[in-house]
Length: 323
Image 1 (cartoon, rainbow, N blue to C red):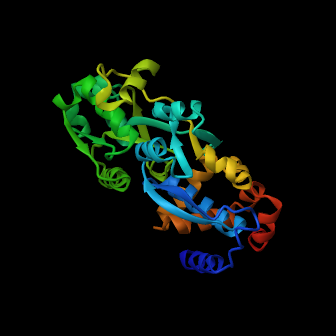
Image 2: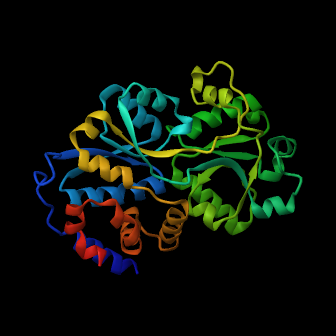
Image 3: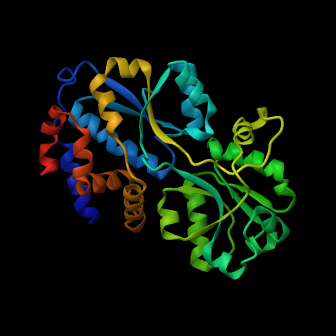
């Protein structure tokens, strides 16, 4: 299957890119390449459609949510941020209110979900572990370690303040992962050996689809507290609040939207359900595939979805893939 997809991808990539003059002078544009899997797939699919259907050159900018927001504030770049989890980024709301950025679409139409978890087998073995208070009373039952997000992720900023408010580091080791891949691998490794595990993760992801996890409650969501926690060290009074249900969007700069109406219209249509993204992520995991290969898998399987995103000219350019 992977060989077939690679062959298809190579054939697609060799297609002639139409002149950008056919759709207006969009020329070269910049787009984020975030360091987690769902965003990488969104980026790969969107990049392919823009280049092959709309005749623009897309330059990818390695980024994270915080870095992308900071760059938008300081440089009005990149043109497109493909997957921003905005409930934990108050700076985005401010940028939007100031008219500097525009929300194109809810790129994950069902939203995202963030929480602290333990494996289902651990919850079954120790049914008393339901809340963060239960875990802190018995830290050895979860392995005496909290698996935290990588630096630069908004969840790391929030988690660090939650940890401070709870004094969690007095009870267990805080292990800060260097990447989303190692964070995911720690869950897979724990499951393979039925070892204790406790930490942060999010959905939709292949990991939570493959390995059943049970949420550890940190209490109700409290808007004011969570907003303070997102401010990192600038939050003078960190508190305890659950993560909100996240709105996940594709955002563009106002200058980009004004200059490229056809592309802005396209991006308003680009949206994945959690079921679709979860299925693609699971396929990627099971086939040890790259994000580009997973994007091709989506393009091949979900023609009826992405075909509706395109304008007439782009559908014509990509007609061979819609048959």
